[in-house]
Image (cartoon, rainbow, N blue to C red; front, top):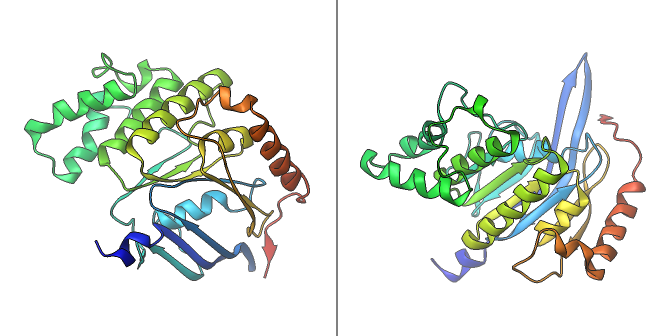
Length: 268
């Protein structure tokens, strides 16, 4: 790798806009978004409902197409399909209900062409990592919501992406489980150090996890502000919330969000 390659942002949004037409009216969902994500950086995006946070992830994952602007991954245009090296964790767990935990986690290994003989050991390692050792033979219907989320995370990790796109991944969980799973993921991420673009409505969650928090405006979505999170790592996902630094940053971000009008996708 050259020095120039090493200093390239992992992901770049350059003046990205997205419009769509419904009932002969054209709506603008995103308007001139400029954002960079460094290699191994954890960036959280917060903003009003309907501001386009999830849409940004869908564009990178090849699930939506932007109208104008450029999106670069490792300096190259992402094209129209899911780029290699990108893994997405959705709000719902998206597990295959007819497959066991073992089989759900095995799927990306098979797609990647990992030799069959190597797959069981890797699956066991991943299930151990997410705290599900002993549940390989269970079906999704036999698991709690938190356990399903762990399986979904293990499945994404099996793909071993360089970039994690996470769309409200812990949103459906109850508050206690959300804190526990969030803390566990933070420890895992601090161990592997991959790039993460993380969408959430929870400001506390964003600050506790991220290196940088990006605030978006109400629709059409634009970048309103960016905030470095000056909290040392490794972090305790729960205890860090009681620090003065955390509280001051939380107050600042909440003030910016509350100053936004209700989201209302603009017509163009």
